[in-house]
Image 1 (cartoon, rainbow, N blue to C red):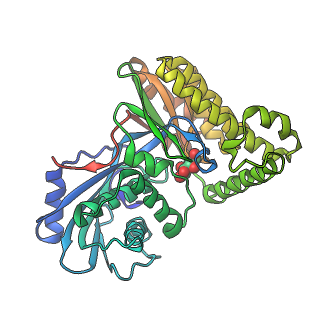
Image 2 (cartoon, rainbow, N blue to C red; image 1 turned 135 degrees about the vertical axis):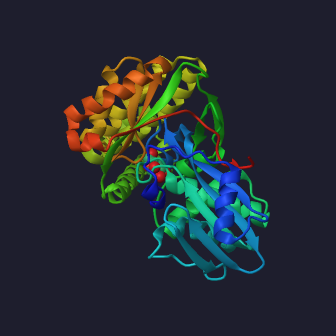
Image 3 (cartoon, rainbow, N blue to C red; image 1 turned 30 degrees about the vertical axis):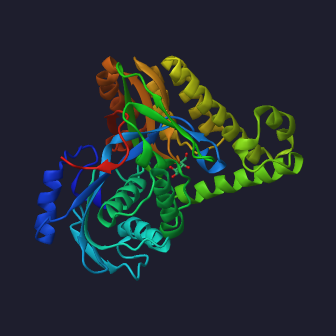
Length: 406
Ligand code: GLA
């Protein structure tokens, strides 16, 4: 999805309607007969970081930026995919879906179609188009949004039964097995299932979920993109997963019922955790306490205690910084600055880490002041060059994937 940033600065929100998508579609394919349009949003996680692959809890929201896939059935098994931002079209056959090393951005789409076909769903050929405004590489899940929009569009065109949870899981499988990135279920689930005005409380083991209402007025979700992109995200992500597995292996040796870190109660961790190698111990501590923070977050949000939720966000950041060690000086600076600004209830790094974004809970009437103060303070803390790449997105909790009808 790098394509999307090529022509459009990530700060610009793209106003799209079904009509404008159809117009572009007709220009590319000659007509828009039978076109169906799916949209799927990016996400930001409010709390519950690096818990999804430990069978734990997460609390993301979908944001007001999305990937759009429009598709029209063809009578054969040919698939054409055109990217508006790249201005490139690729073509392949449903009987031979392969990883594309030249146009890597197409692999999210290819992967989803391949997973569907592998499940025995016989798809129709398609003329398709992708566009969107989810910033890429920022940790806002543009790839999950592309996968979910692709799967949704395929379903609209080929009309097969698939429930929403199954769709999220299939998209995760496409990312794991086809694209080759070992992510958890959070991003795809949020993109598919989120609901406007709510945070999505998800149990990543059972996939039981609950829509938790957020305060309807007086508060905004503000995302700060640090502008830092570190190549080591994938390797460090995999290292953290291995360290968690080492923790599980140890706990299973003392408590045979343990399957994942999610199963280790705080008391057992405190009783038996001292035996762990120090690094593994820190990783386990983060995951185990982070799970309790997510559960607590849901309680305080339901009770309307947004200040308490904000404090849990700060605690989560400190844990990611000191115990899980996936933050970086720039993310720490953004959180420290936010803490000192008026009207900020909570702030933390969000997503995999090593760069990317922070998420801030800001009182509505303090948002302008936040946006005005942050760039200068960030320049002082991280240097002019970094501050030049800072981007601030003021967003709110939006709906998950749906068909774009108007
Ligand atoms: C990435 C992954 C998610 C999750 C987060 C960390 O965003 O795609 O599945 O593991 O990192 O919470």
